[in-house]
Length: 188
Ligand code: AMP
Image: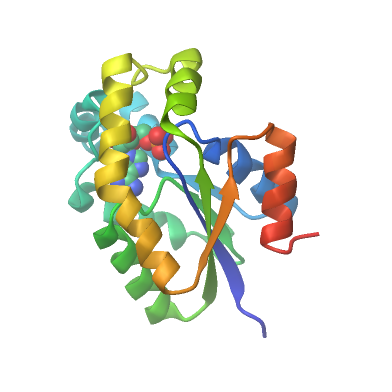
């Protein structure tokens, strides 16, 4: 039987990852798994993990891997994720990418496709300021973009070297991004 596909969305905050990931998830009928959403839920429910994570999120820093890796592994093990999934916001650093690879190798059930949504920083800052989420103050936005450049850009190289990266220009209308994306990953 053909392996199911796990899609990984990369791209800076404000690139439109969440929107595109959601659209693809609906089209393919597989879950959209956003670590940011999972963490915001944990904060809303005031779980111990949520309380620890909030300190980092409010500053625009990454939540430490030891808090996050168990959370994602548990989510990927759930029943609805057995036929494929879309990861939005994970992996955010090379260690997380290696963790995911090891996990995928151990279960041998999925092939991966990585989609990178590229958008220039000045466009991102405008979009994020307009969005107005709690961690969207200008200072935090700038820090999130710095963290992205420092820690997540190496993940793009990591997948590019493996020949898995599909780059899409995210600085287009939402519909055009979707069209380019679907063509790139050959989903009709
Ligand atoms: P997002 O909704 O993807 O923009 O994530 C919001 C915030 O959640 C980020 O700024 C991080 O603080 C935290 N976060 C989400 N995903 C991760 C991850 N994979 N690793 C570490 N922190 C994360």
